[in-house]
Amino acid sequence: MRRQSRALRVGLALMTLVAIPFRRTPRTSTAPPSSRGPRCSRARDHHKRIEDIRVVVSGAGAAGIACSKFYVALGVRPENLVMCDTKGVVYKGRAEGMNPYKEQFARDTKARTLADALKDADLFLGLSGANLLKPEWLKTMNRDPIVFAMANPDPEITYPEAVAARQDVIRPPGAATIPTR
Image 1 (spheres, rainbow, N blue to C red):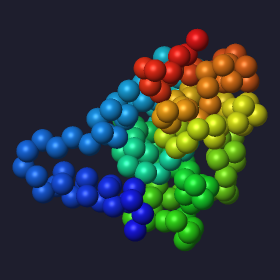
Image 2: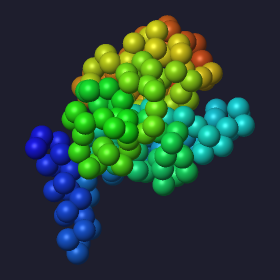
Image 3: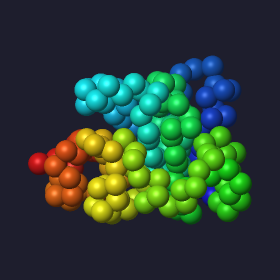
């Protein structure tokens, strides 16, 4: 089993077995700050309710799973959340690279790539790798897209690249060391 899956399994087991507070970095430091996306005032300005926001999560490791669960708990409908990993979209019936944690986010969708998944999405949550979000894909997202490019040390798309592709993009930094302007 891959290292990420083992780490996630161990973390979840510890949370259920240990009688003392147990903190996991993906849940405690990534999910809460990124939760501003679904609750963003821009989404409210466009009269979008949280359950209507379409979310694409790039990265299906511990952080991606934790954030996806958190977004659903906030009110994002599970069918409006598409997860992608190194093999593409996590979809129902896919066998390659699947595990029980990803399986709970497998969706009935025709999208097979990150580019496909981003069409008409409102929010991109990047927890994957550097330079994975192409500016031309950003152009296919809904109006005023929210982009959390949080890969470290280099994000999926830089702030200058994002605003060059779209002036209406909302692109907060993924880390304090990454400038937004």
